[in-house]
Image (cartoon, rainbow, N blue to C red):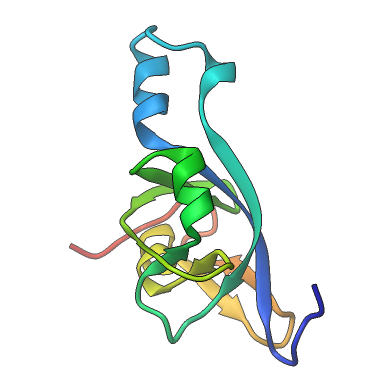
Length: 118
């Protein structure tokens, strides 16, 4: 897929959150967890995460989003053909967009883990 000027994309792993809970309880084998990897568009103008219908069908209803090793659960809008990461995930994971480097980076104040305001 061609990259547009200033576009930031990040390799994203989406995981069924219910499946992960079943693994923790010993009710499902780790290899049975439904996952999907995508080259996601980061859109700081979008509030929510967007997933295509076929991805939602492969994963189930709830998904865990993993970016730069940080995890969060997010409700998503189901529309379009691309995985799009919006502000809610960026804020929960305490990640910034480096527009010049066209990449995501951890908040320099919290490089090792996400810190959120309550």
